Amino acid sequence: MSKRILFVCHGNICRSPMAEFIFKRLVRRAGLEDDFEVASAATSDEEVGNPVYPLAKRTLAEHGIGCPGKTSRQLTPDDYDRYDMLIGMDEANLHNMQLLFGGDPEGKLSLLLDHTPESDTKHHGRDVADPWYTRKFNIAWDDINTGCTALFEKLTAADE
Image 1: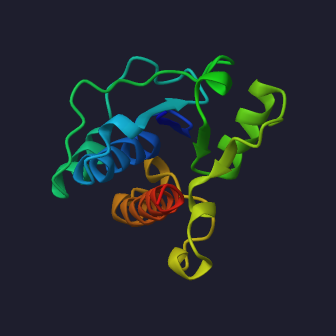
Image 2: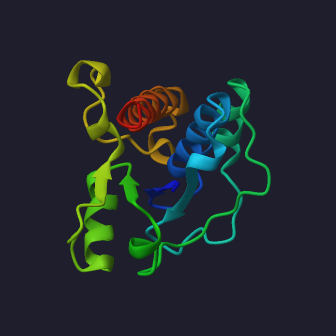
Image 3: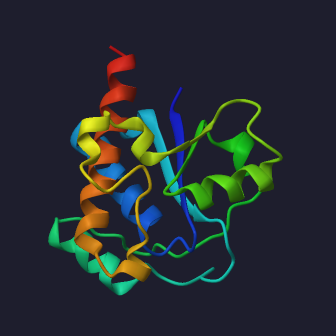
């Protein structure tokens, strides 16, 4: 049975698609495509249907990752039942998911950097800062890559 993971941010044009495609690369490199279903979504409807933000797309491309055809979609109440893990980028995302889902009765919600050892988060904190506002896509890349790598290692170690 595959593990279904949904990465979530505010608009689904920067952080959560970066996490989706970083995680998909980790899965592909390990030859575990049949073991994971990975996607991303937004808590808001502001960007629905829009492609990945150009600077996020460029940051992924600088690391050899493409995101062809990805457009923003909004989180729905059905996503709670569809996915095993719903992973937000910041506290506001987590709060909005809890409101939409009426809480988290099955313990499926978390923040991406909660999956890293404390020492791996450097000075950036537990939230992945939104590069739409900070313009620091390199810091977002570092945090998201660190979080995705730690999550992938945690999930694959559990299967060994």
